Image (cartoon, rainbow, N blue to C red; front, top):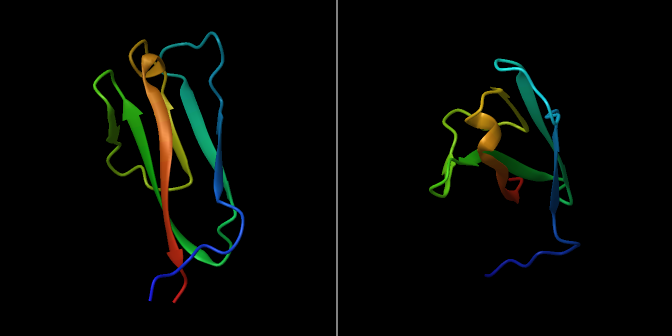
Length: 88
C-alpha cells in the first residue's frame, strides 16, 4: 500500500555564524532546525557546492556542521538535505 503524508510539509531552517568579515581559520557553525517530522527517523547530510554542483560532505551527517573560514570555503554554497521515514 502506498503511504501518504498526513500533515503540513516538513521544513528545515539553517542558521549560520558567518559574518561579513571573518579571519582565516575562524570556525563557521551551521546549525539546523527541522519541523514537521515529529515521530520520524531523520537522516542528515550536509552538502557544499564548490562551483561544480552540490556534493555530500563526507562525515557531515548530523543536525549541525562546522568548517573553518578561508577564502575558498566562504565562497562555497552550503545546504542540508534531510531524509525521513516513519518510526518502526
